[in-house]
Length: 372
Image (tube, rainbow, N blue to C red):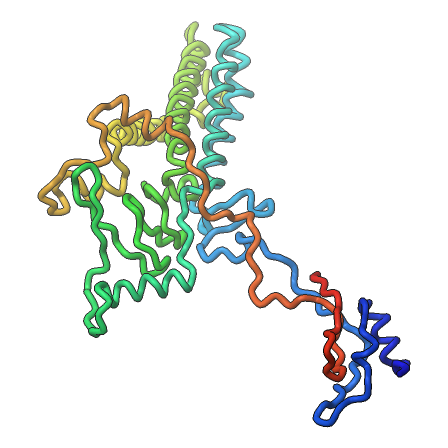
């Protein structure tokens, strides 16, 4: 039996393979021929999206997900502006005079400190602080089922506190349930309300760097505030020396300020900044030596302020050097959110030839399926 012409054209356009001619025999009673479709139209699925494009937290992503920042950048532009302006004025107006009258090492030292400050600030602000991925709908449903029926009973009783208890260094630590991320938070994890993410070893959300400070960027934050302390104190000392040298010979401080007005701006900025930055560096040095976080210190998790009878810090190694190495020198944990990975497509429509309803036969029609 000859295949109708419109079937041949359709099969040719859709690139069918090895159609059994016996399958085109006269239809038996009870079998109908499906209406012939129009031109074969391939339905192309939408492009694969990366995970950062559908990320549920309040973050912004740049460079195809390589850079992530908090949606509320805080005063990060002000931080960058103060560092750049103050350092720029120092290198332009103070360094030439100090190199001429003192030593050429001053711009070298200042340049090294400036590079450390900028790099550590970028690493703190533009990296993943240790965000935990949220539970999938299936995982959330399973956790909800375990909470509702902890022992498999059918009772409608719902335990009011959603907590779990784990033992760390022979001390019981409670894990709280996050209603947003649908997970039991690991130890030392908290949910940041500004970024809307659960962050491992959450320290605090710092508006000066425009990001959360947690497990993956705390060492960069600590390096930033320490190097910024040295840079601020160094510039303050150099500017003071510059003005003192200019005021010698009976010229006075007024003459020195008139000769170098930019130094007055640097002096004011550094004077009001150095105390707060030095205090912050000292506070975090204490936290590092005790293996504490700002969140734990404020809440008094291990100092008895929260009402706990057992107030020992289970994460401390009882040694300052070991605590510092544990916090600052340990291996960098990988990011868990895989922000540049692809989102798995659900209900993918496989692009392929449009099926034509032929009569049933012993041999099936073999056709090639292709995906976009």
